[in-house]
Amino acid sequence: MSQETDQEGASLIELQEIDQKHHIHPFTAASALRQAPPFLIDGASGCYVSGQGIKLLDMMAGLGCVNVGYGRKEMVNTAAEAMQALSYYHSFSAVSNPTAAALSGLIANLAPEGMNRVFFANSGSEANETVLKLIRYYWRSKGKPEKKIILTRDYAYHGSTLATTALNGNPAMLEPYGLETETGIERVRAPYWYRQGGSDTPEQHWKKAAQDIEDKIIELGAENVAAMFVEPIQATMGAIIPPEGYLPEVERICRKYNVLLVADEVVTGLGRTGHWFAQETFGFKADIMTLAKGLSSGYVPISAVVLHDDIASVVEDGENIFQHGFTTSAHPVMAAVALRNIDILMKEGLVDRVRTDIGPYFAKKLASLADLPLVGEVRTCGLIAGIELVSDKTTRAQYPIEAGICSHVSQAALLRGVIVRPTGNNIVLCPPFIVTHKEIDAAVDVLAEALTEIENAIKAS
Picture (tube, helix red, strand yellow):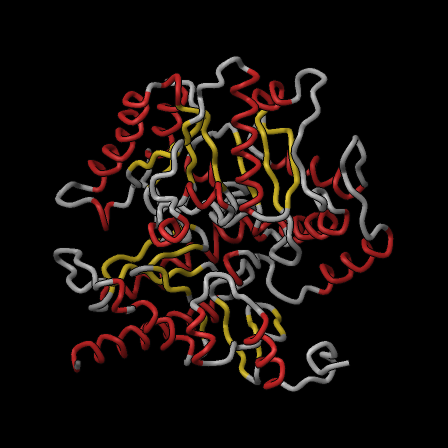
């Protein structure tokens, strides 16, 4: 057996070489792996990850998903026990399993009123892809097959399948696949005052952003518009937090024109904003909701589509077979781990902690960075934050994206032992719910040092 097929006992360098030769990394430039070997993470506990002898404070909770923290013994034991009992069986043809049944009921009990039907998938992308199909199914069942157009927003992120990529508002994700002008997808303005508000006040801007939705529906014809997708907080593109009143107004517009409202709560669901769902935080109600990251705290792949009864009653009406599903939908081990994850959130009061203790502390400490020359704005909600970097605070002018200022700041923070995420000209933070005051203090101190270092480098160049 060759060394590449017998991994046990392989050295770090050997594993890195194997990875470089065979592993295609998501959202990674191939040139990066040619220039340097991948960094191998091989352990994690609490809010820290470690690899290659280095310990790092992870202020991103992986990708905004490890809400209960790393290395929870009860999660590991639950997975082992569930796998011992029932390692796998499908959920096709009216078959289920105890953990999937229990999880669907628990989600329905936690979800906003009227959202009682749950479909399981394996990722946020799959959940949103499922929603796109369900929307088609719904309107065809209602005798309105012409309602096909999906509205989405600038700066949106809804996944990386072909269909969900087309929903995204990041041109860099669309252009390589020729999806910039994908038919059936229409984009409207995001409530992103800092970048798009111009001379308007924040209130004027969000009202215009909401009006854009109504104008687009009128332009296209309400009889042709099927649904509006929103992330309550546009996390991937910079933690864009909507102003008070915006999302209720979006809901009002959708109701007025008989357009379905989809809440992509892949990031915000299960406590990130200080409530179980961001719909409660921002005061609106969706017809369909998607969940993923926080559902299992990233311990296993699982996602869910949650339907309001009004939608489910149409989708499930009649004798037709629901022609959709995945081999591992409602996987018994994944469902068991998700149940344990929610149990931890409940027993330890972690969602309340985000709202009443650690979230406010997080916001207060990060606000101290606003006076630094590179920082234009600090946005926080619960345990998610976006830090805007600017070249001119007065005009809100940003550095060219190709200058990579955010990447330089995040790298400077990484070298000091803290993981944050650069995205465009924003630094994003989404720490685990168990993060301590002391760990937040350390992370903010490191960010202040990193921002100052890069500002001094810019001045010297």
